[in-house]
Length: 247
Image (cartoon, rainbow, N blue to C red; front, side, top):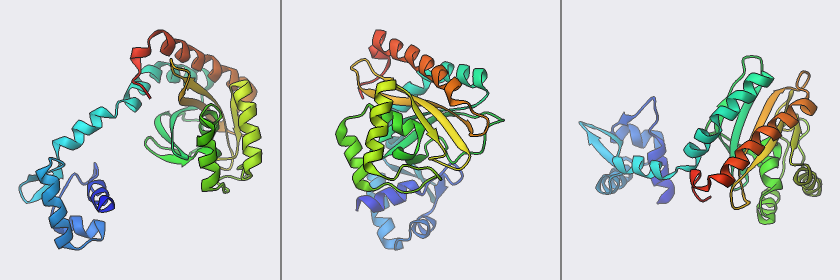
């Protein structure tokens, strides 16, 4: 039942914000009678609304969206830092959070000189194959690392770490230095340097990276830049813990 509800709600996009039951059933691959029954319950609870003969997302969806404040608050705190990093380095700057075994990108500032990357705001990548992911895992509880390794490591880029013991050693080095370096682990020709954002309670809440072409990006130079920028955010979170909701 939950998967069917998720499929119905996910069928609505910015390009198609309204549709009828028949189109909804076609997009979800479900019987029209099944969709009609679920839609009736979603309308009753405010997750969908009728607009003429079509359906649209209801107010309850947007209310729940407002409760998901972490990405919005993190972006607001970090936007100036990310802009400064992009201007200083001329490279693309990412910010991501850890969710299960993946990173979710919550802000990206693209550089016109950087390579085309598979990342997008709201998009996901395996945590073990990205700079931001390794920075997050290095400071996450060991259970989070175990979960990632148990789900399996596979080739994402030409140099992705696919051995669990090697990944653990890499995360120990990152934790000691405070800097994650990724060279063609998430994609061919792409490298990055990333550092974790630590909340007032000492837990990792996000990570920021600088990414660019491997042939032109000097991680030894941009690494200290991203670390310095993140240290400023960490100090802000310690002095203003109310600026960020409990994570």
